[in-house]
Structures are given as C-alpha cells and as structure tokens.
Image (cartoon, rainbow, N blue to C red; front, side):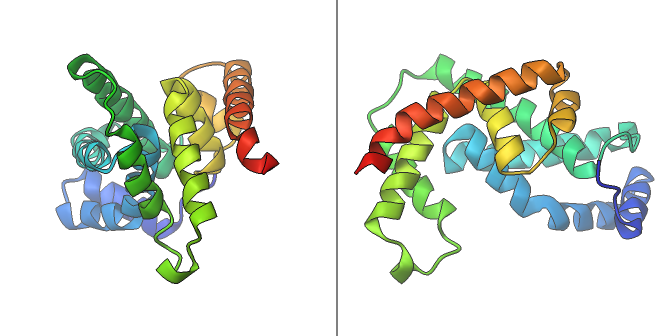
Amino acid sequence: MIAPDENEISLIVRAQRGDEKAFEELVKKHDHSVLTFALYMTGNRLDAEDVYQESFLRAFKRLTGFRFESSFKTWLLSIVVRQSINMRKKRRLRQVLSLNRQEEWENEASLLCSDQDEAEQTVKTKEMMQLLGKSLNRLTDRERAIFCLKNRENLKIREIAELLDCAEGTVKNLLFRACRKLRQEMEPYFRD
C-alpha cells in the first residue's frame, strides 16, 4: 500500500468529523480516476456517471468507517467496483443486449482517447479502442474489475485481493483468464 500523504490524511480526518469542504477536496483529488474506472467497469458514460455519483455518496456516508487499513483510493475503488457490478446486474435485468451497444462503445472509445488531439486520433486507434471496449464488456464482472484494477489503476495483486475480499491466487487466476480472453479477442486486430 502506498502511504497517503499528510495532506490527504488530514482531509480524511476532517471529512470524518463532518467537514464537507475537506470531503470536496478528496472528491476533486480522485474524481477523474473514479469516473474513468467506472467507465471501464460499466461500459457506458451514463452508467459510469451514475456509479460515480453513487460511489462518492456512499463514500461520504461511510467515511467514518474508513480505518486507514488501505489507501483512500483503494477503499474508494472498492466502492466503485461494487456499485459498477450492481449497475450492470440491474441493467441486465432491464434489457436484452441492444444493437446500440456498438455505437455506445464507439462513443466511449473516443472519450477514453480524449486526452489526445482529435487530429492525432487515427482510425486504427479508434478501431482498437472499440475492440478493447467490446472485449472488456465480454469479460465477467470480476475479471473486468481485476483487469482494470491491475492495468488501469496499477494496484498490486495483494491490494486487489483485499479490495475484492478474495485470495491472491484467485486474483491471479482471474487476471490470467481475463488477459487470455482479451488476447484471443484482439489477436485478429494485431495480425493485420
């Protein structure tokens, strides 16, 4: 675990005592990574925004329970994982896979690449992001969570195991399966 800086510890303690401004600072510090991670987990912008809001709301309500046993970011991402999985379950119950899914991933792919200039985005990059988005969506919720926590958030296997409350061996196994599935799905793209 990376030790939080003194400023973050101070913000957390103040927020735990009810200081809303301190909590706002914590939100500002982590909001981009929470929204981006929620986007990877849910697969669409609207659901990601809902997960983002619900995650910070739950974090605020449960902040007094934060015991500094993990980093604040890890604790916050565990909330995002649970909210994302719940969102996906609800969505599956409400709808059968829609034909608009491909269009949604195209939009999300361009959002994920938004850090680059529009002029620099090539058709190949967009195609690869679309394929990655579709491939991530085909993973199970746990595989997607583990893959994103490891590769997007750079968490250690031990941290992921703690966050998801499972054995390190389970995390390694699910990460291996996720990587294998993604490799198989994306292999045709790299052959060309």
